Image (cartoon, rainbow, N blue to C red; front, side, top):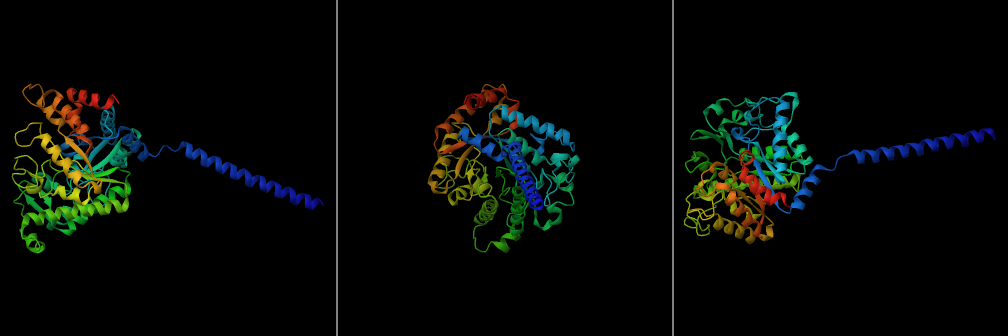
Length: 422
């Protein structure tokens, strides 16, 4: 009997321990959940949804325009400069940052493909101290503030001049594959015709989205740098199906954009991918389907970027044309361009491509005290933002660029009236 009692007692004690362990485990799990901060991505999306529009700003790293203002390997200084920009962006009412993380076939994060940027630390390939990861910090701190962080890359540019070319790190893809490189005027570029170059760019983007919780991938407006690009050998090798070299070049860029669209959404189906092309696809004086403008510069003919096709095919989640001219401009009227781009997006309505309009806030900063300048005082930007808001095809605006906006009270006033009154 005593043995039975002892057995029952041992079982009871064991059950108590099991139950206690389960309770403690449950409490631990609950506490862990309580302590875990709200998913940063969800916070950012919530802010966009609350605003119901894109309120973006470009933060440029090339030539140290916005970040960092001065190259440094100091993690402390890089954090402080990032905080200053992030706080300014938040204070002015933006909800998304487009941070340039690859200005010249380099990286603002530790990469197995590209060396650290010279614009970050002062020397290409030199890492920040203390194993600091700038992109990880930007993503984390942006999300803490409810801001989206989109990674902005330039796909083809390697070096802007001979000095930059000569200072490339040994680990640069351009050093490892000089046969992929074409010199054009003072600059150096990867050849858009080569499948290996497309793989390089796509691989670099995949690396970002697999390692960072960025909210989007963003390409700027630089593609082929000019009509006299030295790609005759590549055209002979790859262009048999294209009697016109311009069509062949446009197809090369199309293949990159389409490839990026596929690769990005295979990894993260909901990630935003978009491009901010030059604002004039083509004037109708040069192409019958172009805009009611007369400028001879266009993305279609000058840069071989057929941005309208990207919308029509649904290869981008958004298009953000840079409409950097004032209303009533003689050769590139803002209103005419806004109407044209609105039509492009509406014609491809089934593709669900958003239209974000790139605005030239920087021109107000550059106008200074010149009262005869149409950009003086911020009224031009205010009118353009109003026109975009009234246009049901426009999902918001992106403003260029942070550093000049931060030093321009008239633009800050315009933004405050538009963004902070809500």
